[in-house]
Image (cartoon, rainbow, N blue to C red; front, side, top):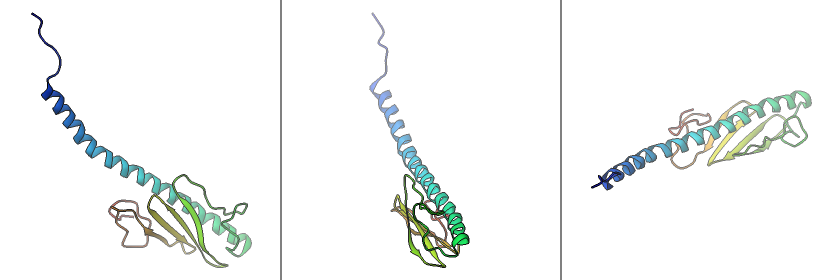
Length: 137
């Protein structure tokens, strides 16, 4: 007579329960990690855009005309965010990055604001770009 080998139903159920618990913890953590990486993309592009805007102002003594293709300060093109210049005058500007449920602003005085966050995130209490789900900068 041969001895039966293999796994019992209880052993398989326990294994599936452990995998389910691990997935329930790991998937949300990984999703938050990806979101924070996308925020870094927007923050980097806005910081780079600030330098380009100041270079445009030094050469032209105005911000008017910036944010256009072919200038020293063209709007960046990234995968997860769209960039606009909703306010552009001779002496002031505001650059806005929108995407992934977030809206980040930057102006000529280097004031950084998070004006919109997705559900589950907390907007920061101060003027800064949010970097964490709890509203930290």
